[in-house]
Amino acid sequence: MEGTTSTSAIAELTKTINGYEGYHTPKNRDKTDEKFREFLSSKLDSIAERLSRIEEQFQSSGKNHKEFLHQAIASLKTIIYSLKNPCYCNHAFFSQPVLSSEKIAQLYDYDFQIKEQIEILDEESSQLILDNNDTELNDMLNHLYDVIDGVNQSLTEREFVIMGNGE
Image (cartoon, rainbow, N blue to C red; front, side, top):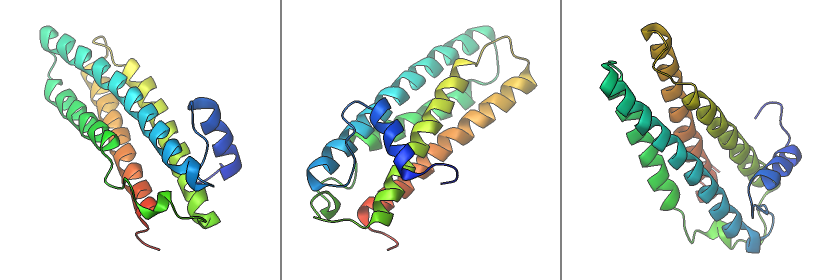
């Protein structure tokens, strides 16, 4: 990840996410992962709720973006489900005595990157209003969907690191 060291990523993550203790020791890994996923789920739940309210406003106003919002909400709900039901629970990653510094750095970088993507998603979803003209609205919705797709991709790559794929 460009511009962020693992040290600054860890500092920001521990400051932002209650209970985030890091991946250096086996006793902290499971709790840190759980707290990270809970943090993301909570943020994404709020964003999905906001988008649902906006979808209702668009429907009552006659705006033609309801289907796009519906797809974005469905994508968020899929991500939330995967966060609440990860495929890697009880994986050797959580009990392995020592992890490579490269693997640990990758996880911190992914966690930081995903946290930043969620912040962008939160900010941009709060700026969706009915008063935007259709071109602005299309651009905003396209970017919003791109960020959602980026979150999903980053989470998938993070899972690969945890599960040891590609090593």
